[in-house]
Length: 273
Image (cartoon, rainbow, N blue to C red; front, side, top):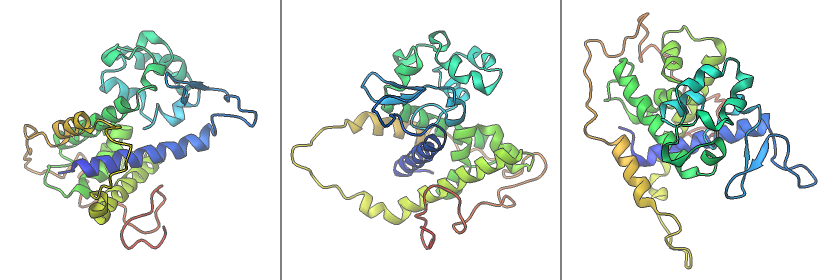
């Protein structure tokens, strides 16, 4: 079972990968004169966020969430997806208040981009949904190590369960294969990081004058309810690992820790950091 600490690492890894994608496609928020570049606006907290046409490549917010993911989370109306007939329309549709459900008081893209905690909880819910979906289709049975589970859960949360199913079945297109493998490697790095440095991560130092700056109670409780919910059973299958064409976890080339192309490079015994 993936722990709270490992979930935090997975979401942090997604945020770093998304930032790298933003840097590549849209660059800095401000130009040399201190003016906002095209596509950038200030959110409700005066923090620059990107709402431009390249959002179809970068995704939404801190975690690069797709319109499909936002729909699964209940933030977008299902009909919004039918309006995105080509990727270039993504920004125009998401910037239309009418496509938002109003859940959590979010009625526009700028509203959503103004609440990083909600973006985080949405990403956690996507991880939980991906985990359960992977069990439902038989790719996971719930008894694997956290590292193996994360290898499949992370890309499923980012790119959808179908992308992972197609990857397992060797029917995914080359672009999907690259994206899924990269996310799978990054997930492994995140789990390895927690396993290696968990003792240090659990060491807290009191900083005078900065107490109660973040209310962790609600966030930690939400993580526990979503990820460690005992009501989610371990589903048993006659052939738990086999999907469609006969590909299985044992037969999938799970990326290792050498010759990586991911963002983080802190896996144990990795010399290419």
